[in-house]
Length: 255
Image (cartoon, rainbow, N blue to C red):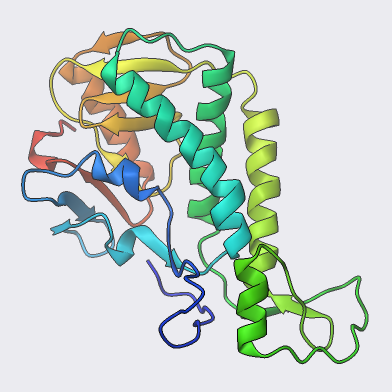
């Protein structure tokens, strides 16, 4: 849930800095909306169901990482994945090669690391290596101009906005997970013969739902699974989700 501290922008956010940052990309969530334009969510904390649109704050954090991380590093991973997802949704006979496998690895890693690093508890972090930066008295406007242009800035006393440091941590951990820990994963395209997949808030299983009836899974080859198999996947996702899970229609999801 979006309950961590974050730094507000100037009034009306003239630099168009991203404040509400999605953990799972909005485009991925939108593939699960129903005819009413919402998705069905189960809140594990409150033990209740509710409907939400893809922009709901439950799916976001607020400025937990810097603009450069959001608009460059993360956007590149997301765009590659969404292009691949669109191709596969249009052609389920698509074969996963080395390049496609790497794209899915990076996306899964980014999703997982963002979900586990979405809360920042302080606004500024003091550098252990930079003892003194002298007087740094940037105005709010100057700081936002720098950030919108992809720069990281410091503040008095060797301090930096915590979102910048968290963004660097996310990039390092995403790269390590995708390119080292997951290097031997082999993804397959799985179609549900009956029933729908649920989507977790934090992905632990190597499952990436694409649509209500289509997902990536590792290790796996392309194939179709029964309602019983879908239920096994959903139970695992349900049990390992932290705060919520969602679907196009939870009543169509076997458990």
